[in-house]
Image 1 (cartoon, rainbow, N blue to C red):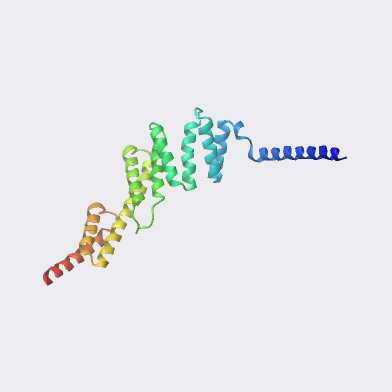
Image 2: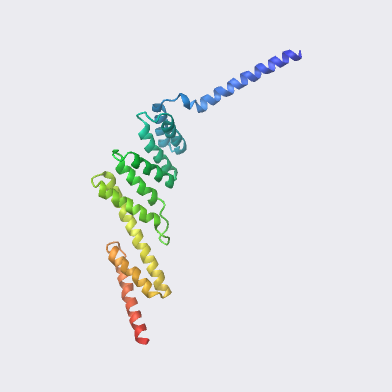
Length: 226
């Protein structure tokens, strides 16, 4: 009786495990059996549906398992796109940078440079912060416009470039006004003059001119008093 129960138990466990494996295969599948075409289609579908983590994994599978397939280069670019969409901007920048370095003649290079600029542009903080990312984005968009002036991405880059310049001008004005309020007039004057020389058409010109006029009056009065 005990022996029969043992065999029944073993048989039941075997059926359970087979069912579990079947369920796992059903939901997860065996990625080792998927062709690069299947992986690419799954990755693109996941990108469209907003599942960027799964899209990244599908594109990475192509790169790892099918590095010589016709989808390999596309998978490199799409990997960077998935990282960008995920908000991993530093990692995305590195991925785009690697793509440009490895495939400098690829037709997608204007797009890649634009995306490199966007990786920094998306990390720009408020006007009262140091604009490290603004400067990097500005340099990248300038390079894009210079190297590929006829590209559709150059037109987009030009708009983003103007935004960067406006932000930089606003930052200079913010710092100049800070010095002005504190009474550090010579430091403020340097900032305002910098705006006139470098950002004459960005909308901060008139305020900078007004403050320069006030500072000169104050410095003149102070000199007379001394």
